[in-house]
Image 1 (cartoon, rainbow, N blue to C red):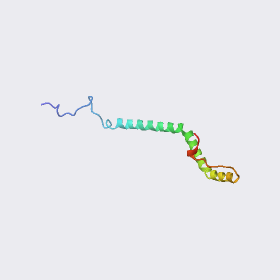
Image 2: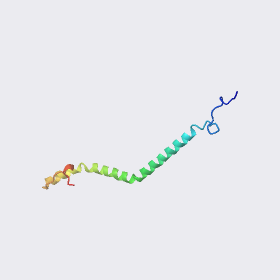
Image 3: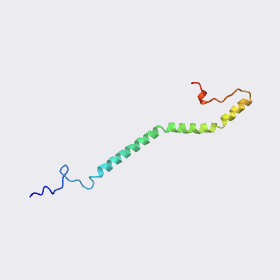
Image 4: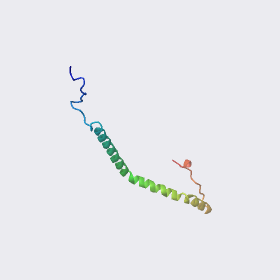
Length: 92
């Protein structure tokens, strides 16, 4: 009788330790998450000036919104022939 049938199967000639199953996976997840974080920081720093300009223009547009109808009415009272220009009537 031989004991070969009762021995555990070895992969690559040695048994993996307690760290052999989760350590490579944890290292890969950490590297991928770190890379994704670096890419996110790089993209946000690249477009930060554009986002600032967009935010400022958004607030300026809302600040001008009440003034446009008032100025239109004032121009009409002064005798100017002013009609509000619709987005659909704008020349291309």
